[in-house]
Length: 277
Image 1 (tube, rainbow, N blue to C red):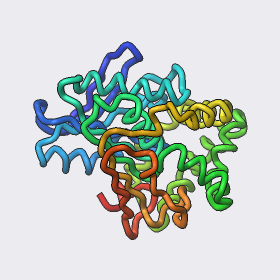
Image 2: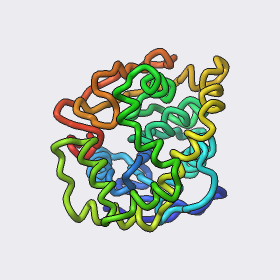
Image 3: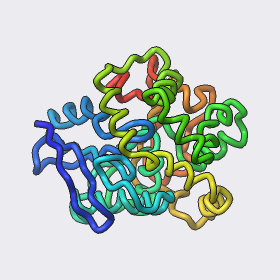
């Protein structure tokens, strides 16, 4: 039965949904933007039916989890490592699944702490270096990612995102998963979360773009673990994704030192875990 709990950690309090036997192998599911933990409900139930302990936290900056703190990419990755330590251990590594921003953090957590995880799956977003490559080489991707630039303008973007019952959020969902119609109750719950959480969800982008050159320099460092991921990983993208350029080569195998597979989901967009659960 689905449960909502709160985990008290040294990095703050994290609310999470859980389903499945408490002694089952753990699958930790990380949401993205603009989204929240209940987006995983269908997958949690399926995993629970297979005997897994399926857990989906609200990430930092998303109510009812901790709203303040550091939002740079390394600190956010540390949050995931803390959560994985609480739900698993060095002797019982867990499975990690991430969508959108959750995918970014999955790539980095798997790279930095491979012993904590058995395997990983990323949805929608390729390896961070591959994404930077798309921004530089693909004009279409630069246009699709224009919202990231908007989010740097604090007062303006706060107004744009929150006006008109968060109609900007509706627009992103329609553009990123064309043809998909989320149920009204689902969107009402999501908007309540986002409205309560602002500006936390936008701080992810403000922290990653403003120190862009140092961030890229760190990722390009050949000694960084991001360039040699040592656990099996499945990368999944939706063919109709309106957020990540569908005509781009999203293969991230160059960053892998373990088995890797890239899979495309037909007739699905950015939110493929809801469109084709």
